[in-house]
Amino acid sequence: MHETMGQDDAAKLRDFLHGRDVPCPVCRYNLRDFTGPACPECRHEIVLTVGVTRPRFLWFLLAMIPCGFSGIAAAILLLPIIMQPLMGGGAAEGLIIALDLLGWLSAVGGLVLIRYRFVFLRQAPGRQRALALAAWGMHILALLLFFATMLIIDGGP
Image 1 (cartoon, one colour):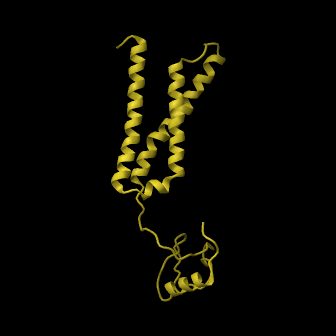
Image 2: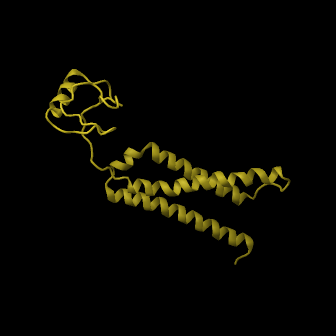
Image 3: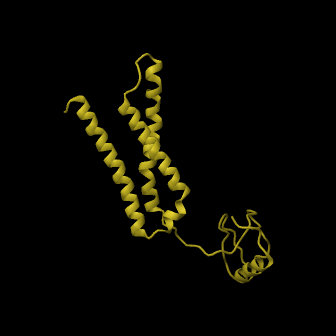
């Protein structure tokens, strides 16, 4: 968050916009020769900043997908875990409860990733790719281990 613009910042912004066609980042209103503290069209405060034209979120999103999916699956799996004992079917199996806990853990990992998204985005693209592939690899490995454990418990295929 930035504080209210000081006089120096306002002067720099006026100098930058003087004689230059620049759209408001919110409503696209032309801020040519802009002199006020807010866009005259949408009333959002205008600040002069340095930024990237196209932030690259691909690897961040790809790292988030398995965490989000696991969290949704854990929430859905929680329903039969809660309902089975209430309907007289006895307690849910430990393996199902463990799978659900892993899903919740993955969802928490996704929330941590969201919290530290700027740390992730500051990484080099190769490192971002490696982290996203590691997230997918861990989730695929956990799923394979779950299926293998189910086969062993059930006595094989």
